[in-house]
Every structure is written in structure tokens, then in C-alpha cells.
Image (cartoon, rainbow, N blue to C red; front, side):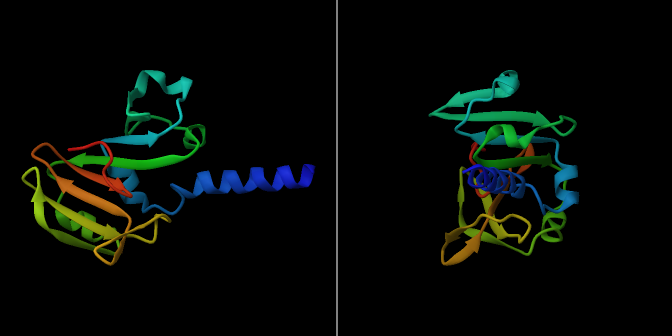
Length: 150
């Protein structure tokens, strides 16, 4: 029984670590802030949390030390970048990216895929695992989608 519990504990830790393991380091280190979306309330980060619709949205700047394992099941990650970041920055750091047809709230929406993030969705018969939008104020890159709005 102890071996079984140990096995499941190791699997849980690997799954939690895999959310960020393998992300392109340049993308991770270049963001201004990050939003972590989870259904779990984390007391340690209560001053960073906003609750809405049974989800908790935790916002951190790029200098914050974050223990991702405390969130349990992370449902999404949104990275916020300076509005002057060039589109080629994103193109050069993912496997593919394409512009969707139409706009949402007047913004062009991009979808793409990177092998650096394990989860994915099927959108328009394409395997995607991030959404990207350039607002007037910033770029937002959401894994697997932008879950905070824009």
C-alpha cells in the first residue's frame, strides 16, 4: 500500500511540474505578469487572488517566486507582455501560429502550438495549445486559452 501511495505521489508531482517544465525559457522570463487560473484556493497567495465563477485567478509580476505545486490542478496560465513586443518574438518561440478568421472585441486573435506545453485543444481541426491577442495595452498569451478576458 505504501508503494502505491508513493507511486501516486510521484505521478502527481510530475504532472504538476510538467505544466511549466519545457516552456521556452525566453518566453517565461520575458513576461511582465502572469495569471494562474485554478479551482483551488491557496491561502498563501490570498492577496494575489480574485475569485470569480468558482475559479481563482492569481496575478503575479515577473519577479514573484511562485510555488506552482500549491495550486494543484492549474487550469490555465496567461502571460502578459509589453505592448511593444514584436509579433516575430512569438513566432520565433513557438512551433506554429496562425491568425484566426474574424475578430473578437475588435482584436485579431492568434492560435498556435508549441511542444513545450503538454496540453492542447482541437480548434478548427488544428491542434492548438495557446491563444494570443494584442490589445492596446499589452500582448496576452494564454495556455491553453486566454481565461482572464482581454
